[in-house]
Image 1 (cartoon, helix red, strand yellow):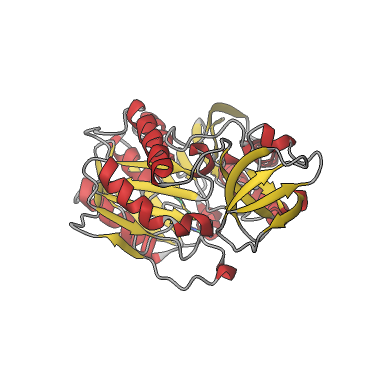
Image 2 (tube, rainbow, N blue to C red):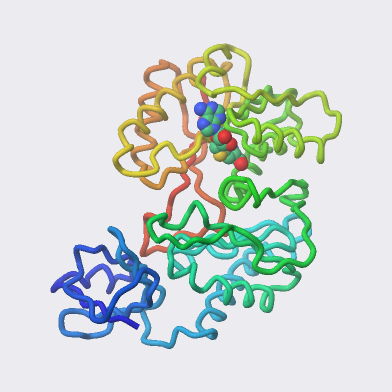
Length: 391
Ligand code: SAH
């Protein structure tokens, strides 16, 4: 293990349990540091602060423990057990209606750099740091031993690991027994496409927000923009919507949406999907819809893109506000970590003002509970949503 000493006064955030150390805080590194190495962090007096994974970049260390302990198989076992116990207490484990949930949510589970999603009998591991990449085999073994009914572990990190690390690996199964890609969310069946889909295959973080939409859908003409796998559309259908239109610019997303609608509402003529760019589709929807979902991809992947992203949120929301029927409801989201709750709300506020409609906030939404925010790491609050009533 290498040792990293911090500059004077740079230990404050670590003493407040923030799990990142930025490269500018480092005074010196003992030993030949390689990306992914375990690093023991000490302050300027060489007092222990934590242990983390070293990486090359502006975030130089991701802390995985603030205790002076061995990082062995028992350490990882204990972390997975704690994460599992929390999901069990949330009622997500052994639940009859739902067998898709997030088992590990990075910093939210004190495992910076690691995401694990469960889809029925398959766990999908996604590493965001080389340190987590190095322990993937350990993790796969622990998951199948500790979590009942997990038969397969798929590793999907080609797009999330730093490309400069040059690791030369391919996504694939670490453990493969009996593959079943159909999972369940609140009694809906859906295809979890971890092989080719975005993220780990499905957006589990919207589960609770989709349930809220179901509650508002009765007799409504619903427009689900950026539908991806059609999650919100399924709930709108069950909620008794008059019609549901799903829009996405990706052909693959439309195939997934159609497949999921077919799985749950075969031959139901209320649903139509459109493979089209959202901004074009929204040119001409005046007075057609009473419920509109806007769940675009992260417009700002980095801080540099922030200004353009806020403009895009404003444009998008203004189009919905201007054209929604009187007494309509807009579910609007931002999943950009670089956009704060306040910035997003300001963009939506500007859009409302531009439309000159009366707009009231009914709900303020976030990610589902199995994507917890570590109180010491507010950056983890990435999904922001507003439900608005438009007169
Ligand atoms: N609401 C979805 C998740 C949306 S992910 C759910 O509940 O699962 C964002 C989606 O936006 C992706 O499927 C992507 O293909 C789509 N997308 C990106 N840019 C787009 C654009 N300009 N117009 C329409 N769809 C777009």
